[in-house]
Structure formats: structure tokens, C-alpha cells
Image (cartoon, rainbow, N blue to C red):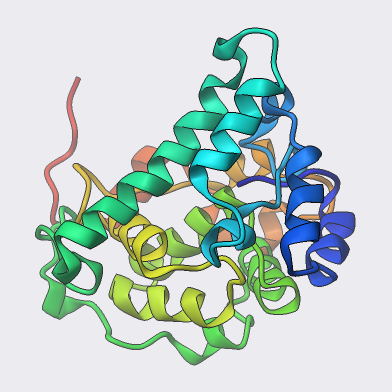
Length: 249
């Protein structure tokens, strides 16, 4: 789920998130599937803030889907929103049928490295939010202060931990489970595997241009403060995955 307003305001909103059925119904009544589809990839885009209520069973996926359909004139206007609900359902079904996949690599890493070449623990500077990469440290601070991160920020942090720092995804998954209000083993761990490439065709990486495109003015995307990210995808691929053959075509 994505953010509804500017990051600072969103942080305050999440920090004061109220539990219970009445609060969940109020949040559900406020969703805008059309705005969500148009801006969900941006940190200051339209959000629902429903994920904690879904995670803890206060709302059901069926209930949210039906409300989304009832809130639009054309069902196609809610398609992207419902697709994201479907992903949550998909992760849960995998967990039910293959519980071993939640903590074990589904496939080998597709990074040119073996699992044994990844560290099993997060580095101290990442845990402390003092990596020296400005946007990464801001995302870590948001995680600790609000218990919430926009999906893009989650992907950025996961990719940084696994690919820049070469840490096993399991360590990152535990980290998120300890701090996210909406974290559940299915969505969280399988998403970390997707970023790591143990449950996808290739590793997910990003660069500073991508962060600048999807974040607001509250995130520091100055090149001088984020040098390890300020490269082309081609160059990042060479540096992060030196054992892989260059992609052609």
C-alpha cells in the first residue's frame, strides 16, 4: 500500500494509527482506487493505510475488494487496486501450501553469488541507520519512527541490504518483521525473496535517479550524499554482480 500525503504528514498519520474495527472502517471508507492507480508508485501518492488492518484480520481482502468495486463507476477503475489485493492473497496461498518457502530460498540466487557468500546478519551501520547513504538512512529512520514504509522504500531498503551489502534476505526479513506494523511472514518474506532473486528471474536493483523520480522533497537525493547509488543501471550491474555475463540485446 502506498502513501496518501507528503511523507512528513504520512509519518505522523502512521505513528498515530488507531486500531479496532471503527478505525478500520473509517480508513476503508476513505480509499480512492482511481487515485491509487494513478500515483501508487510515488511516496507521496495515494495510499489506503489498510495494510495493518488486513494484516491483523480486522478487515478481510474480500471486504476491501467489494468496497473498492462499489466506490467506482466502472470496475476497471479499481483494477490496479484489486491486483494489489490479489498479490497479498497470492503470498498467503503460497504460505499455506509451501510453508517451507517462507524462510528457505525457493531458488538459487541469480546474482553470480552462492547463498554462502552472503552475510547472515545485518551490518551495524544499517541497523543504526548510519550507512552514509542519505536516502537509505532516511528510510531506516521512517521504519523505526512510524512502523510503516511505502512499498518502493521497502524495495529500496531490501535491495540495498541484499545487493549493496551482500546480506542474506532472511536477515532483512526478520528486521522488517520486527518493526513494520503490517508485516506478515508471507508478504514480507516472499517479497524479500523477489528482490533477492531467489523467487524471481533476476535481482531487483535501483539507482538514485529512480529514487528521485518516486520520492518527494523530504528525501535527500543529492548525488554527493548518495554516491553509491548515483550510477547507471549498467554500471551498477557490473559492480554489484561482477560474476554475471553482461546482458545483451
